[in-house]
Image (cartoon, rainbow, N blue to C red):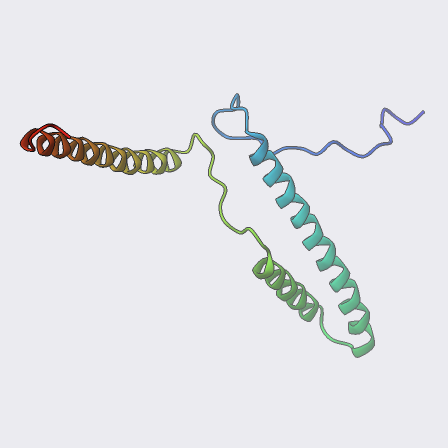
Length: 137
C-alpha cells in the first residue's frame, strides 16, 4: 500500500564515532549534543526564512542570486557569533582532559600535604613548648 514506507518522522541519526564505538556517553554530553543540534536546526530555519525574504525582495529589486547567498552567510555568521556555549565539549576519555584532571589532582594533593605538614609542625612546636615550661600546660 505505501510501498514499504513508514509515514512517520525519521528517527534522529546520531553521528557515528570513528574510534571506540562501544563507548557509552554520559547524559550530560548527550544533552549538550541535543542542544547543539537544536541550535543548528534553528539557525538553518532562520537562514531559510531570511533567504525567502531576500529572494522576495530580490525579485522586486532585480538583484543577483549571489546577493542572497551573501546575506544568508552574514545571517549565519551573526547567529554563530551570538550563540551561547561555544566552548568545545571534552569527553572524559580524552587524553587532554585526563592530563588536565591529573594536574588538578596533583596541585590539590600537594596543597593537602603542605597543610598536613604545617599542622604536624605546629603540634611539634606546641609539644616542645609544653616540655620547656614547668608543670606541663
